[in-house]
Every structure is written in C-alpha cells, then in structure tokens.
Amino acid sequence: MTAADPARERARQEARALADRLAHGERRAIAQAISHVEDGTRVGRHFLDLVYERTGRARRVGITGPPGAGKSTLVHVLACLLRREGMRVGVLAVDPTSPFSGGAILGDRVRMPSATGDDGLFVRSMAARGNLGGVAATTYEASEVLEAAGFDWILIETVGVGQSELEVVELADTTVLLLVPESGDAVQVMKAGIMEAADIFVVNKFDREGGDRLITHIETALQLADWNREGGWRPPVCPVIATREEGVDEVRQEIGRHLAWLSGDRERLQRVRRDKIERRVRVLLRRALVEGAWAMAHIEERLQAEIGRIAAREVSPYRWVEKILRGWRYRTG
Ligand SMILES: Nc1nc2c(ncn2[C@@H]2O[C@H](COP(=O)(O)OP(=O)(O)O)[C@@H](O)[C@H]2O)c(=O)[nH]1
Ligand SMILES: [Mg+2]
Image (cartoon, rainbow, N blue to C red; front, side, top):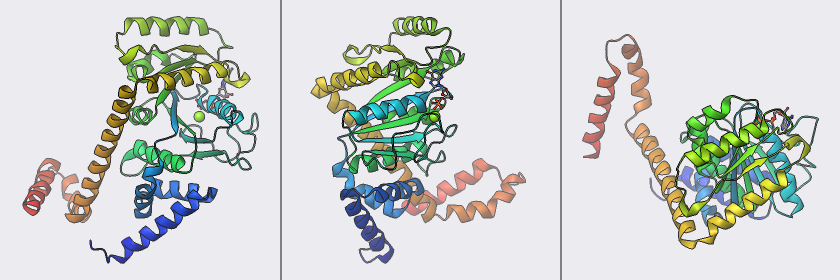
C-alpha cells in the first residue's frame, strides 16, 4: 500500500467530491454516502475519515421496542414536532419488520408532511444485514453521515429484541423504550437487558386496556432493580397514544431533560462520550484486523478449498482454524 496506489487515490477523490457535495447540502450526496457506508466501500471509509471533525454535535435518540409497539408512528410524530421547532431531523430505521422509505412512513394513514420537499428532514431505512461490522456499525456510520450533513437530531428506530439492537441503542445519547399494554413482551424485553439501557419509558397505545397496569409494573421494576444509575437519573414513564399524537410532547420534554442532565455535568458527558468513542474504535479496529487478516492469509480461498472436507468430517473445524492461526502467527512473527 503506497501513496501511488491508484485505486486508493481514486477512492479518496471520490470521497472528497462526495464530502464537498454533502457540505453544500446536496441531498443525493447524503443517500450516496450512506449507501457507501452500508456496502462498506473504500470510498465510504475515506468519506467518514474526511467528515469526522464535522460530527459529534447532533443529538442521537434511539427508539426501541417490540415489533408493532408503534415505534415508527412515534418517530414520525416526534420528527414532525422537532421540525416545527425548526430542528433538522434525520431518521434511520433499522426495523426490518416495518420498512419505511421516502415519503410515507405510515402508508396512507398519516404522511410525513413532505419527506421529499422538506430539506430539514431525511428518512432512511437501513438494510438489516449491515456490513462486516454488523447492523450497529453501519447505523453508527450512517448517523455520522447525517451529522456531517448538519442534522440537529438523529432518530434511530430499531426493534428491541436482540443483541445487535442493544448495540444500536448504545450509539444513542438517549434511549426511549416503547412498550404496549397488550403485549406479554414487556417482561421478556426487560430480561433482554434493554430495560437497563432505557432512559425513558413510553407506554404506547394507552387507548387500550391495561396501560395503567403496565405503568405500575414498570415503576415497580424500576424501584426493585437497583441499577444505581450514575448521577441519579430516574427514567420517567410516559403514557402515549402515538396515533393521536397524545403524550408525545411530554416525551419530547423528557428527552430534552435527559440531554440537559447528560450535559449538566461536564465530566460525566466527557466520560460517556469517551467511552462511546473507545468502544467505537475497538469495533473499527477489530473489523479492520479481520478484513486484513482474511485477505492477507487468503482465508476465503482456503476455506472454499477445505469446506468440503470439513463438512465430510475428514477435518475438524477446530483443527482447521488452529492451522490457519498457526500460519498467521508464523507470518506476523
Ligand atoms: N391503538 C393504537 N394503535 C397504535 C398506536 N400507535 C401505533 N399504533 C398502531 O400500531 C401499528 C404498528 O405501529 P408501527 O408504528 O408500525 O409499529 P413499529 O413496528 O413499532 O414501528 C400500526 O397499525 C399503528 O397504527 C396507539 O397509540 N394506539
Ligand atoms: Mg417500525
């Protein structure tokens, strides 16, 4: 890898052009940059490097919960509310169960005022596959693209069911967890560790039976679990009817309160950010190491050559991996 590597130079140039277009507010540049990031291209990496200094100023809010809880609906109402405040809002939806793109989040019921005409709003559905670093890494990078594009708020919708979703939540400053009265998921979700990660609880579909019971349930759980949150943030529980836009103002206020609480203590804020960036650097390095080693040791070819024998039980996967590793150690001395 020398400076004269033409492919690398081309990628750099392309990334620079993309960053310039982004700086000039060109919408298509945002979409293209996110696609690069999703595909894990070289241009994407150069691009992220170029715009890094422009990131870090937006507020990132993660909205998570079981499928059908009303996340997309809440995100939609929240985005409209923030737009009315004059904020520029970027939305990333990592929800394979309800993909929304472009104009209509909610099909023909409620529409985003004009997702196409409004420059202050950008909505993007993320591919659920993610690149080598997984969905979380891709989403993180996409949110950096949006930050570089000057969005004040980034709302990230994700289904709160698995580990990768927890990781997505990690990249947010504030995490909102949606639960609904009728779902027996509440307890399950709590077990998944997401409850500890939530800064604000929303009991959505409060027009239905059992909302009060769920609120009591959550509040009891919050009292019982001694999570010892730093600085004493007590997660509020907000009743909401997202489809009627009821209670969303309160959610907006609570997000504001949480952000104010976060930044009220300089040391805490710096530590939180530093920890996040450290985790981020680890992810990036791990990915780079895997990619590098994979290519350098021709692992793909060797795997393809051997997989038949492994499958036929002639070679055990353990021995094969050991062999690859030994060769690798030898190379790197
Ligand atoms: N009754 C009622 N239905 C709601 C409410 N919020 C959302 N829904 C409906 O619940 C369904 C799932 O909503 P959606 O936002 O797609 O959920 P997501 O899968 O969490 O993104 C849709 O039919 C919504 O109209 C609410 O507050 N009350
Ligand atoms: Mg959804």
